Image (cartoon, rainbow, N blue to C red; front, side):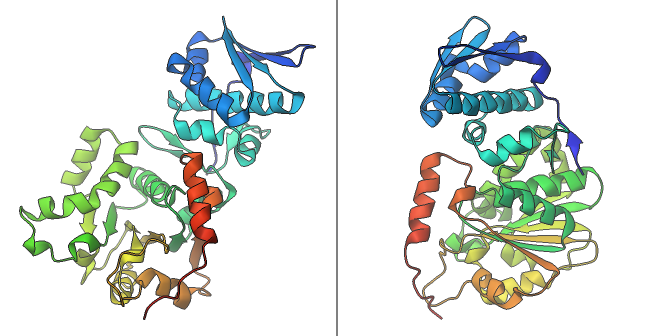
Length: 337
């Protein structure tokens, strides 16, 4: 479903000068301060990203560069303004996305809507690349989605966001988030504490994702009602998961038997999302990744959507994108059976 977003067009004016400068004049001081950032930090980041000179003067931001760069920064400021209006804050990843051609195109479409916006209690989430847009569509429409790619591409983040909106809209009865506790070798009985204390350190990234979208009090109540469940993959054995949105994170660290066990838990009214990075396998030597095998075996089943992210889809620090590309370019090692 498409939802309209408030936009900044009525609150910003642009004045072009003969000396290759462009003034962005704000009618709303709170919006201006949000875009500029504390100690001008957002402008400084945008300057580095676009190699332009930006000046904060009165109720204006002055852009000084060539005509092409001026337009790039103008569109970036429009995007950041819309982000501030809709979310009340601007994050580092918003600044990175502000010069992305995909985001500029989405933000400037004639209907002033961004396709597949995900509304959660704490923030609005939007796809930041064509691949993320395809992923969100699959999350809303398919029963099983297998998503692979490097960290920072939004695989888990977007899946949790979509699952949460489906729960709040009562399209499902609960969210189940799982991952292999491979660091503990799944032998949790040897660790100190009760079961929650044993598994929580391995599940923390999933808690972090939920905290992005839900206030703590609401999240606690949902845990108490079992509307949201976080559990190691080993705990899925023997269950049938009905009317649930189920996410298996870090699936590259599942064994082939665990992956088969998980996939066959799918019950009526449920949706399964499997995410992982096949370049980051931590399994013991000689044990094949269940995710790698699932991709090999299940490709071709039309009811299963496969989304393959690459380094260009990373929405974290630009250096992370370069690191991921370097690893992708390295010749792949043969997997050990």
